[in-house]
Length: 205
Image 1 (cartoon, helix red, strand yellow):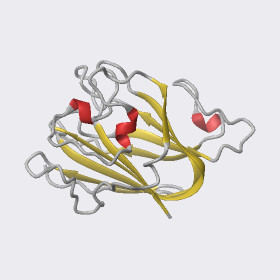
Image 2 (cartoon, one colour; image 1 turned 45 degrees about the horizontal axis):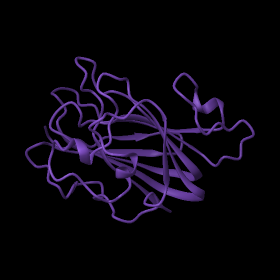
Image 3 (cartoon, one colour; image 1 turned 180 degrees about the vertical axis):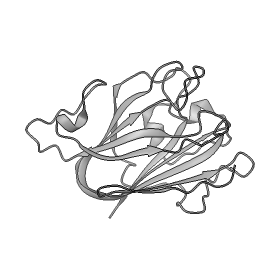
Image 4 (tube, one colour; image 1 turned 120 degrees about the vertical axis):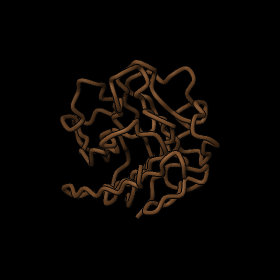
């Protein structure tokens, strides 16, 4: 599969996707259009909380998303965060403990087939709304309880199993204290559609 680059213009944010097929993916996570994961960024010391859904027993802890450590090969379950097999995904929150001006949110994933692509909705909040609910479970629209919808991120391929390495970059996010990731399965043909998320970087403006 050739390198995929899609640009979607949303209300404020811009989303860029990039893809390394299995034949060229390496542990360095080098992409043509998106920077490799950083070892020290605004997410490094953020607090991550699982809001809904269950992580798979073979998955890493949520903290693995911000520790700067990357998988060494394409199928390393313990180095990635992913939801329970057969489930429809879930939600987790990132808390910076103070409002920061976010230039980019970059998410990275790697798997040889259907667990490579990414599919999630990104929300953000500063926590000041009187209706703010920090833990909106599935079935609750975050936009109804103090969260701002930022972007829909989908790196689903037009054809094939979607294997390889993916990077998605959401820019012009704004000033927020919290980020909410609402993650979905990438396919429904079997139980193996939950993405192997390797790292999340948050870059200050």
